[in-house]
Amino acid sequence: MPETTRRTDRIPGTRYGNRPTMKDVAARAGVGLKTVSRVVNGEPGVTPETERRVQEAIDALGFRRNDSARVLRKGRTASIGLVLEDLADPFYGPLSRAVEEVARAHGALLINGSSAEDADREQELVLALCARRVDGLLVIPAGGDHRYLEPEIKAGVATVFVDRPAGHIDADVVVSDNYGGARDGVRHLIAHGHRRIGFIGDMPRIHTAAERLRGYRTAMEDAGTVVEDSWVSLGVTDPERVRRAAEEMLTGPSPVTAIFTGNNRVTVTVIRVLSEHPRPVALVGFDDIELADLLQPGVTVVAQDAAALGRTAAERLFRQLDGTLLSPERIELPTRLITRGSGELPPAD
Image (cartoon, rainbow, N blue to C red):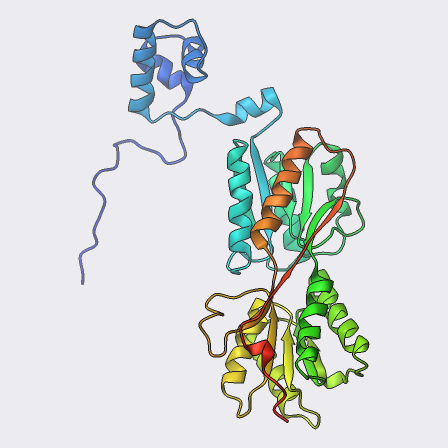
């Protein structure tokens, strides 16, 4: 059997979770607690020689200031929470990074977590962050009722919703123009001769999915096209479900000649289905995807600016914390149609 490698550099007597305190530093440096406190907090009144001894003790022990005590004194933690749908979703990468940059510029720490599109998990995460006394919250809602947050907001927790509005409370929200973007994407397909256009989207209870479906229906209605039931499929973005929906649209009695996809995950699965299909089918997707410009043809998309969503929401949050905002607002950011080839294919029949 292979020999197990064991660490030999552990400090004797170390018990994980027992961190050195200011009392330990004071004992090692031979000074009082007040002196250590002054050095740690950068306050005057300590001679250079004493400060040197205290700093040597801090370095030797690996002491770190306990900010929890400062929170009790000042009432601020210099931290904010971000609750996303799924940290693994590429859409949320630039959004989270933008929030982090704004937080860093304000000297705050960002703590984030995923709700997995589960309302109970969202509430659990949000309240756990509140229990840890974050100064503010950015929430991409999974549920439709956010009255559980009212006591926290009244207690002074700044809150901004992102990508989707809050349910049953009046709160700041920053969203993309989901309706207008979807409408423009479908109109683009119509302008290239398509009338049988399928729509594959996320679960209908999700605000963004419902708005994109509304945009699709508006564009089809404006073109005088009656949408058949078989052309619309909403549900989880699981690849198996999406693949089945796409194949049914492409092989039914009234097969579609184009597909509009409701988000990036749906788009990726539909691209795989279309690569196996014998005839060319036009495609426009909501959300840009990585390498979309390198495919043949390139994928035409309705792009939303995820980084701008995160940055705008975070800046709004810190304006709340600074006391410069009076009433909640809805901020809607524009989308952009990027043509690359797939959305410009003419009908095959």
